[in-house]
Amino acid sequence: MAELILHHYDFSNFSEKVRLIFGLKGLDWRSVDVPSTAPKPNFTPLTGGHRRAPALQIGADVYADSAIIADELERRYPEPTLYPGDNPAQTAALTAALAAWAERDLLWPLARYITGLHADRFPESFHYDRATLHGKPKPTVEQVQASAERNLAQARPQIARVHDLAAAAAPYLFGETPGLADIVVYHPLWLLETLGGPSEMIDAAPATRAWMSRVAALGHGAPVGMSASEALDVARGSEPEEIAPDPAYRSPESVGPGEQISVSPLEEKSAATGTLLAIDDKRIVLRANHERVGEVNVHFPRAGYRLRQVED
Ligand SMILES: N[C@@H](CCC(=O)N[C@@H](CS)C(=O)NCC(=O)O)C(=O)O
Image 1: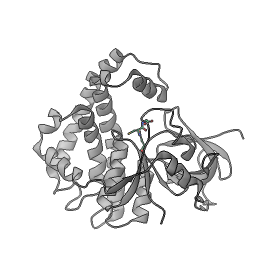
Image 2 (image 1 turned 135 degrees about the vertical axis):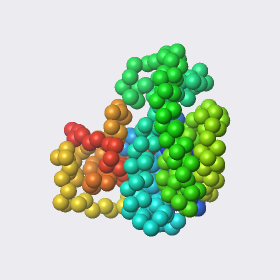
Image 3 (image 1 turned 180 degrees about the vertical axis):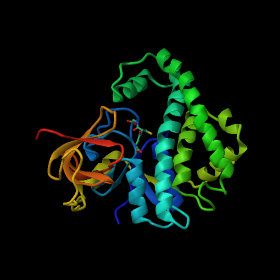
Image 4 (image 1 turned 30 degrees about the vertical axis):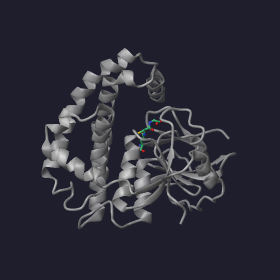
């Protein structure tokens, strides 16, 4: 089977989520560093232009979001499962609901708080890059710093929820076996401490600290470094998988297979473009073409992405 190639960077929390999935499943993988700001000329040829990290490349198929990466890894490597317990479908549905909360209400106030608190440690270009991504004007370092306080006010009530979850963990959120649920709640707190050092908000709850240590102990599996150009060569030397569209599916945007489309994360300025290959309520698959890599399939989850038809 083709190697698992993760395009990621060290302080990316969504990348940490995937690294921990590799750890939970005990997988070997290849590790390619991606810059944390645009442009990303050795990355976007693989993604139809999508710039966010992480992306998992398997040959000429690229999974461009941690949620679709989790789905694909569970499909290819079902044991140990990401959804432990007697009712895996129920665990998967509850995990998705937990991720929606953790990756929005918990993550974003924490991320804005900690990058605001340490705004002067990042180059100005970093703050500008993130503002541009969200269609906002260039902020001053002082403006970024000023946002720390109001975001802390929003983060704290959500951390209190994590404390309640961790206090009830036995010893993981869904019982004796770790699962994706633990990882999705963990990675926002990991970001807080990766950027800001040990946090008093976490030390205040020993159960949270102990649960976080258990999740961190999942590790990252077995990575071996790879250069970005080697990864591009792998894509160029591979054929993308054939994927049959569901003929019965009608997208609410009235877009169908064979049409030129753009795919963007909701409320964001960046987009991937290509030919729509397949779509249903779970996924969107684009066929993109770039002179460096030839044809690739780019896979996105349906939830969290919007589609637009574009002119040929
Ligand atoms: N929904 C995406 C979110 C990915 C995301 O926001 N990644 C951040 C890094 S943790 C990012 O790409 N930031 C902008 C950049 O690196 O260009 C996922 O689950 O993978």
